[in-house]
Image (cartoon, rainbow, N blue to C red; front, side, top):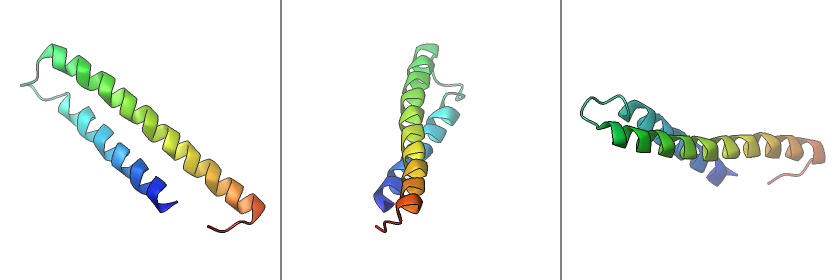
Length: 67
C-alpha cells in the first residue's frame, strides 16, 4: 500500500511542476500545448491512484483484512 501512496505523491508533484512550468515566459506556444497535454495525462493517472487508494481503504475496513 505504501508504494501506491509514493506513486500517487510522485504523480502529484510532476503534475504541479508542469502546471507551474507552462507559465514560464521563455516557453514557446507549441511547447505550452505539449506541457498541457502531458500535465493532463499525469493528472488522470494521479486521480486513478487517488481513487484506488480511497476504495482500497474502504474495502480494507469493510472486510477487516490487514495488509
